[in-house]
Amino acid sequence: MLRSFLALALAGATASSFGQLVDVNPDWKEVEVPPPPALRTQGLIPIEMPGGISLRYAVDPASVTVGADSVVRYVIVASSPSGAVNALYEGVRCNTAEVKVYARHNPDSGWVPMPKAEWQPLHNRPNSRHSLVVARTGACVGQGPSGSASEIVRALRTPADMRFMNR
Image (cartoon, rainbow, N blue to C red; front, side, top):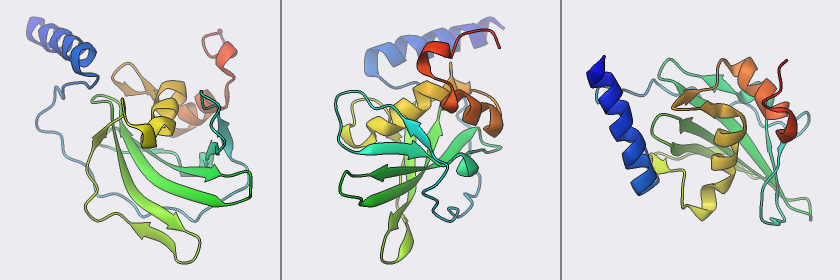
């Protein structure tokens, strides 16, 4: 018990020092990742991005899953004011504060797998700010997923000022 507490305390101290958490499970293995679902552009959950970004980001609620490896996987869709649509199929490891892009959607050829994708830190990465927002606003709580896929979808749909209200 004391060893677990010390490991978590060390992980927290390391996270604040380096902006990334230490994996307290060195035997963790990623499950075989299912292929990305068909791209949907209707019924998406908008993600509020700070900083006046012109792209609009949204999560496909039907794509949200929580794997046996505790990775939250989802499709994020980015739309520009001109109507261009891009999408990513990605996963977030809440316990290490990392993100991985499994596939990118190309309007001409559909989903294109990212064969050499690696886990990257959620923090201090300009191209993954949307991933950090998804993690903070519904996918993760503490160092784990914030529940089942349906609970994560519910959290993502809840306005920021209502997230900690009794339901």
